[in-house]
Length: 187
Image 1 (cartoon, rainbow, N blue to C red):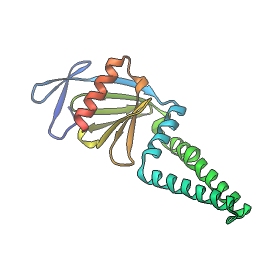
Image 2 (cartoon, one colour):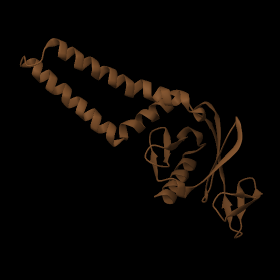
Image 3 (cartoon, rainbow, N blue to C red):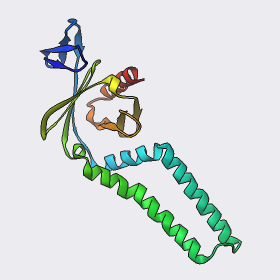
Image 4 (cartoon, helix red, strand yellow):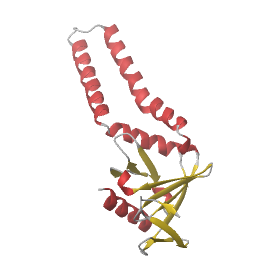
């Protein structure tokens, strides 16, 4: 018997149902998906841009650029300083927009694999094509659920999250039901 929640034993009853040790029938939903690289990169950018420290950094860089341009207009800043600050801003922008998401995508084996996800009122079970290991997580592990355009972000902290693509759901109803369940269990 598997344990998803400590003290809770599950018995398989039907392909999409489990019977817990209190003989309560739990509906299990199943998703299978692979990650699309461009969508994941977009989701990672979204995640970074929502972080407080990135917002502060972005605003500080913008203010620096405005002051530099004003200083140049009033001949307080030289052309060399203007070009240097503009160049630094472009490089930093490229790092945050391109290099950081690509680096994370390339280093995370999960994004390169096929994912099988089972979810119920009790939690989720994640398996991959390249591994026989099942990762069983109670909904209590997650701290926040965020729905973006193409993904659900299931946060396990401020920086650690699991992505569930909205395209993995066969119907809009399944997607709404997952969102309802996740928000009810996590919030």
